Length: 502
Image 1 (tube, helix red, strand yellow):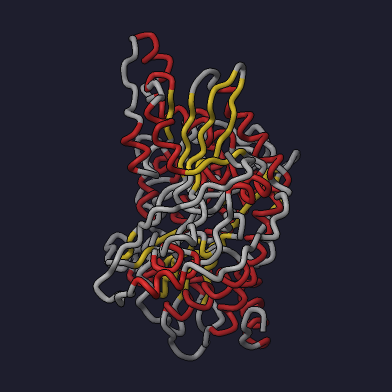
Image 2 (tube, rainbow, N blue to C red; image 1 turned 180 degrees about the vertical axis):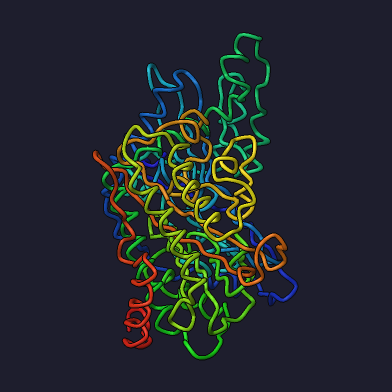
């Protein structure tokens, strides 16, 4: 375990030889294993370790006497022998603060609670050639923390990853729950328990035991603590600066590639955060009507709109989610302004309506009615607003499609495994963080709208904290009204391009 004097190490060579790797004679291999000084990381206890312990304790209370297995996931192959950058599993990171791949958190039942053990890879032994030949050796990827160092930093007992497998083999399936879909070896090691009597089936509302574990973690994340709110604000503030970076390089009089905008924002995300919170949506012109346009292979056109849905994920994995739609030329046309202002009114109505205790569905309907009224004003709606809003119809959604927003946190669509009655069919509470993001999208090939509307897409999205009495718009650093957007764009262009950190 992590408090042992002698650290377990990888001693058996696991280096995979690729076709392009050079051969090494035995004398060289022997030479490489000698002459290395002992080193240690300057590890400080994480300020978040008590917080992670509290979260584990809250989860433990829900499953007395059961073994809980939460993996972070493996690195994923991008092509041949190259991997995608690893991003820790959100639930695992929420409970441990550990961002390394392959690790597995196990809560072992003890008395009325659980003992938490983090099973993780140890350092490569320098008595073998893995440290310089293996693709995850330290001369390739950098120093890995020892078990003791990781225990000191995260405040959780650690054990070598190879000890996990006999541990899981001894687990009784009917008393074990696994967060599945992250690690195929873990999934295979503990088969899901499916035998339930009729009464139990009804009580679980059809959810499996493993799904109940995922649900429990999701619902712990619904209410954000002060530290989490700080992390979200950090990510949002960086996102605001990223939008400013983009505005400063967006020409008013000529086209540029959507991928230029994607790349400029990505620079800010990598400089200030861990990475992007999700694939950036950069939709110029008719691409703005495609809800998840991430190919970003188009060009901006003066006179058209540019929709940008982008967010920075900060170094503790909390993400922003912000959308702005701007006129490339710097000024909205009268019709573009009409559409934009409808969306803005819808968003403002939703934000004004939110407070603790209001139904999630009622926030949605508040935003949607304003959109339906706007569609009627544009002459698009073929029926009355009331008819369009009728639950048996909702034909207004042809031009909006999505909900008013979603929960936000360590995932861009946070708490997605929560029970419907505690999320979509529930009420919002103080310290929830939501996006409010109505939109109108008139597809270029939609023959049911006037020709002049076709190809116009507008979404405005902000990140909103529910307070005791209402809301605080956490992304208020970016303007929202059409007039403010024009003035902001002017000011950013006048300031000129900038490089983060330069």
